[in-house]
Length: 501
Image (tube, rainbow, N blue to C red; front, side, top):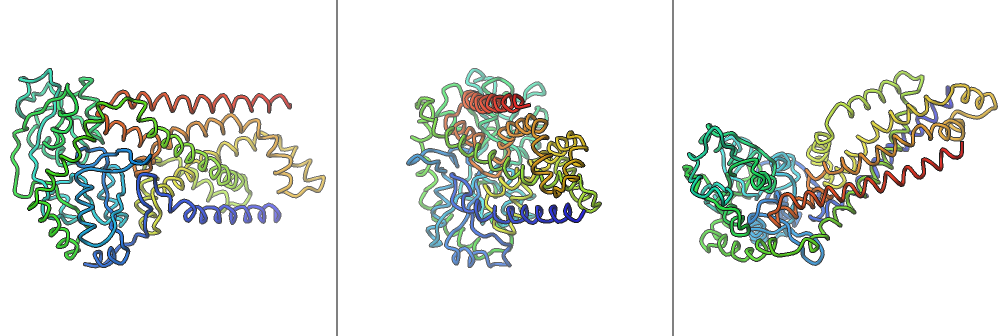
């Protein structure tokens, strides 16, 4: 009993040391799309501007799938976030005398990330609303755009404005946006489809799942200019004094708000939004003219990061899962209870929630970047499932094997290492291989916090090419090839293993 307890305590210390070491190893490598994440913390009233200048970097959160405001392109073999909002962020950074760091993530994660201190401001085509104003502050509007409805060109004449939508028609809106609020208030008669990204809505539009998309007029113009089968009309919606795109910052930061407003005033006085839009036009149109092979670097970068996440998660999951399995088999009630609680909790909550919690919660406190947060979340989740796989394998070995080994004088640790584990491997291997294959697919969830794995890169291609179906089909093929090849490799080693017995 003492030997077993000592062995478990040593294993727990080793696991804890591994998790502690993970943060500095992966922390600086947040994402190939963005610069490294700097230390985050909650600042006091009106202290953020001072902290930004001391840091020398201002971190801007964006959702890079909303051209022309923000989208991804390739530059020197690397992803680069560009757009009207990025140009505005660069001007603000220049006026403040600091560098700009662009942090890509899902639109629905921007507000939480700002409140957690992961970013300093949001410039992502965000419009003032009373609900948002309760938790954050806004700059003066830098762009006052009307709302438009995109539709298939074949429906010209049928759709004239918001009132053209009947109870038999569906309007598409992006989740958690100003357009969603407008559609609920002014188009209650129409059915509504809410999706996370405009490129997804475009796919639904072209496949006739919806009849129109409510977006900013500048966004509608960009899409219609690049796609011959898309048209748009003014939505006929009222606009208030505060309507328009604005920079979002944390509450109670008047010095930063004043500095940003000065930059915004210069942008409006010099008509820079119009100038930036014209400069970006060639990048938006080229998505229609470049052949699909030119987008292979996007997919290749995504494949490499997907495999990295899966490999790290399976290795860390194996270590953690092995320790948890031994704890669950322990006669020590505390060990057993802790491991059981861990496994049940991790398996009983969605992986996406775990990823967001670690990035926005723990990451905000410890300065953990998106990649590190994703790796830790997926590894911890994988450890819970691998624990049950290993526990089942260990229990499949007859108890007489343990008793025989111990009667020969072998210690508990030596018995597990030399006798029990090797015999349980045959039962563990198929399920363990399946977990690895599952991890390749589940790693796509970390794209929600801006990690540029395969799914994230697919979205980048979609937003740049204005095509919804083909990029997704290519991504499906890539995932299938990866999982099929891995499945065959695992089956090969499984047959070799079975041949030994």
